Structure formats: structure tokens, C-alpha cells
Image (tube, rainbow, N blue to C red; front, side, top):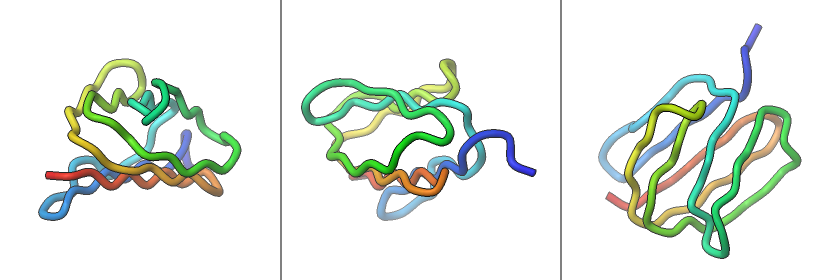
Amino acid sequence: MTVGMKLTILNPKHVLYDGEAWSVFLPGDLAEFEILDHHAPIVSLLEPGFVTIDWERRIPIKRGMVKFDNNDCMILVEE
């Protein structure tokens, strides 16, 4: 049984994160926003900033995109 959402963060060369999370805070193209487990489906562009996982782990990103559907969060970012 999963404890939160499935989260994958990829750039063209590496998997930056692959695991589970309760919360992902993202630098959206219009404003920062948070996705919690079981969030409504969403697709958004991302601006330079940090992806914050579970309010503690921060991963710096350039630009990218996020797709969340069926409790699966996929984040694709530039290298």
C-alpha cells in the first residue's frame, strides 16, 4: 500500500527523484503551488526555482512541466 503519491522527477540525463511523497511544492509559471496526495488532475509549466518534497527536501530546477493524475506526479525538468 502506498503512503501518498508516486513522485518521479526526471531531467534528460538523470532520475532526480523516484519515490513517494505527501506533498510537492512547485514554482508554477503563474505562481507557486502545492500538490498533495489525491489532488485533482493538473498539468502546468514550471519556472526556475525549487521543487520541495514533503516540506523538507529541495531540488533546484530550471524550467519544466508537471503532470499529476491518478495520484501519480511526473515532473520533467531541463538539465
